[in-house]
Every structure is written in C-alpha cells, then in structure tokens.
Amino acid sequence: MSVAPLAALLRESQPCVVLTGAGVSTESGIPDFRSASGIWADVDPFEVASIHAFLSNPERVWSFYRARIHSLLAAEPNAAHHALAELERRGLVCAVVTQNIDTLHTRAGSREIVEVHGSIRTAVCRGCGTEETLEGVLAQLDERPAPICSACGAILKPGVVLFGELLPAGAMERATELARGAELMLVVGSSLEVWPVAGLPLEARALAIVNRGPTALDDRALLKVDAPAGETLIAVVEALD
Ligand code: NAD
Image (tube, rainbow, N blue to C red; front, top):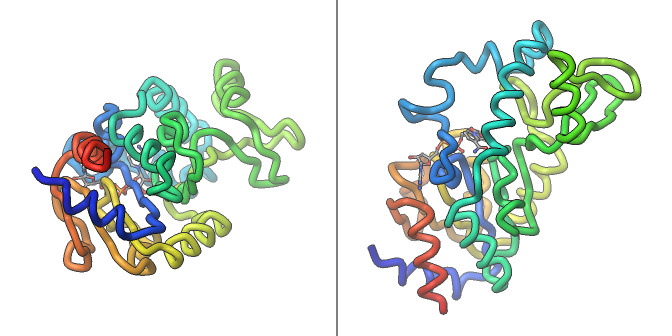
C-alpha cells in the first residue's frame, strides 16, 4: 500500500480537518456499528439507546451504558488516534470532528476535538441542565441503578446523543464551520451513512477517505485508501518525516 499520495495531499491541502467514526476505534477493540460483530448484533438499540427507551425505562438504558462506559474506559487509543494527534502537533491537522463517544482522541493527545454525538465524559439533567462528571456518574452507579441530578433529583441522561435525539447544535455548528473552512477533509473509519454528519465532507473543498470497505461518498473523494486506519496513518506520518 502506498500512502505517498495521501501524505502529499495532506501537505499541500491546508487547513485539513479530520472526521472520524467507529472504524478509527475498532483497532482498540471497540466494535463498530454495522458489522456482524457490531454493538447492535445482539441488542436492539431502540430498547437501550434511544430517547424513547430513556423516557420509559431509564434504568434499563443506564444498565446498558454502565457496561458500555466500563468497556470504553478499558480500551486504549490505537495507532490511528496517536497518528492523528501527531499530525495536529505538526500543524497538518487543525481539528478532529468525531462521531465517537469513547474519548480516545483526547486520551491520545488530540487537542481540537468536536464530539458531534456527545461523549461518555458527562451525564446531563434534562430538567435543569446540570451536568455530572463521569467519575460522579460511576460512583452513583455503584449505589443505584441510575444516577440522579445533584440539583433537582431527576434521573440524569448519558451525555451521548441517543437515537431519536437532535445533535447538539453548538457542536454541529462548529463542525460545519470547520468543514467550510477546510481545504481538505480527511475521513477515517466512517461509513458516512449517518446524517447529518455524513454531509460535512461535502462542505470542504476536497475529500480524502481512509476506510476499510465502501462509504457513501467514495465517488466524491479525490483519494480513497481502503486499508486499516492505524497502519495507514502511521505510514502517512512516516512518509512526512
Ligand atoms: P459505521 O460502523 O457505520 O462505519 C465504520 C466504518 O469503519 C465501516 O465502513 C468499517 O468497515 C470501517 N472500519 C472498521 N474498522 C476499520 C479500521 N480498522 N480501519 C479503517 N476502517 C475501518 O460507523 P460510523 O460511520 O461512525 O457511524 C456509526 C455511529 O455509531 C456513529 O454515529 C458513532 O457515534 C456510533 N459509534 C461509536 C463508537 C465509538 O465511540 N467508538 C462505536 C460504535 C458506534
């Protein structure tokens, strides 16, 4: 696999904004969304990860998220996360927009991150807006089936976008602004099937994709690398040395 064209494109097309999806974290042992071994292979997302489920049975939703949070915290950033953080340090990536809730970009050292689907780092009260830290949420979950708001006593909602919820307006605005200002959007590990995030690459001047398998925007990309994200991005960093 030659990554020289991707490295050259990255050098020539600045600013570059990266958009990542579940595929950037599979090499950390976190299953993606649509594969046969994916998260929803055995469990119906509508029953455990939708706003409808949260409103009708928040304890069930928290039982799912408690296990999910612990498995995400046990995962480590992989070569792809580290390579993206290194590209930002070198001034070749100005921001990472991610659909992932796992916080692995932060843990790898990326600094400019927009989490368009929220993250596990907080839980929020839908009544009064109070936020609770991850540490506080986990401490409460050791005591009771669902964490409650310290201000008003309502049951907190995980700080992730549940099915049926709108995306956080501020994060989407920031992501759109970044995409519009980008000379290049580099998509890593996303099937680009989940809207509105899948529309972001169309706002940038040019698109490059690193993804195993097809994406919805392959025919719009200047360059597509169909290979694992970790080895590809490490090779790009080395090619830029
Ligand atoms: P997706 O599952 O639709 O697409 C992931 C893509 O990555 C697939 O095309 C897959 O073939 C590819 N892929 C898998 N492993 C790869 C690798 N090692 N290298 C390169 N490509 C690889 O995921 P999506 O587009 O992110 O959309 C799914 C939604 O589910 C997102 O909204 C996201 O919020 C959520 N999700 C998040 C996590 C997480 O936080 N880690 C995990 C699963 C799902």
